Image 1 (cartoon, helix red, strand yellow):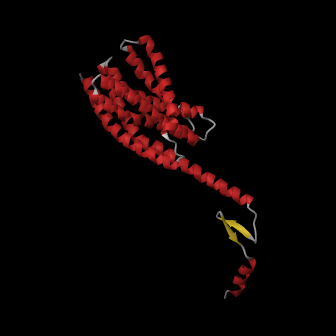
Image 2 (cartoon, rainbow, N blue to C red):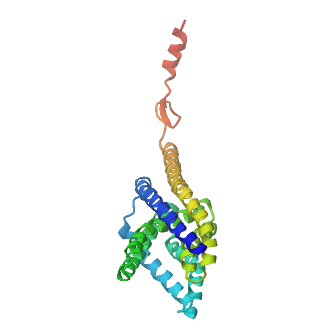
Image 3 (cartoon, rainbow, N blue to C red):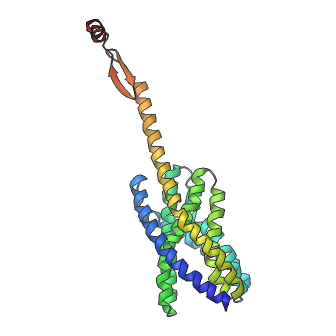
Length: 266
């Protein structure tokens, strides 16, 4: 009984955190479209469909030997994070010929498409079962998918996609685990829900940092490119009439005028 109460408490906390993460992520998506080259969702929809089908296939293969048994839910609790977070990273790995920021943006939009497709599927299923509240709750999970991928890609921008993938996978699995384990062991689900609450708090506090790092990375990339273009321009532009470069600007160096200023000063 205690385990069930802990899971119920976890669901309520997840709902509150989900609303906050949804609003935060929605705001950051608009910000990244302004800072990074905008990428319409429809251009990533194909990758989202691919990621969803890959995840669905791998999960089905993992669950097939245990189908119809409580063990299947335990297996799903273990594999849901690694499978789905890996599937959403497919475009980041596949599009190595593109810039890292283009790959980042494409993968973020892929996660958004993935979350949307999953939400629609669950919505139809839960409504058919009469679970309207659960169907509405699934809309919040759309932005959870984007937030998990943003956390993974933050580490990728720092140089370790593997570390980011592992972090996002653990967060994702622990998010799903309490409800999945409730059907197999209420006591275990209650214990796991305590850990999952900590993970939810971490997710809530990390989503801003993950997006902010990407935005800062993009701005620094633009600054470096502008500086490189300016340097190339200075090298290719010939000096005329005694002009020199100072602080990135052309400055006219008129020796006669400078000489006159020196001799005429008191």
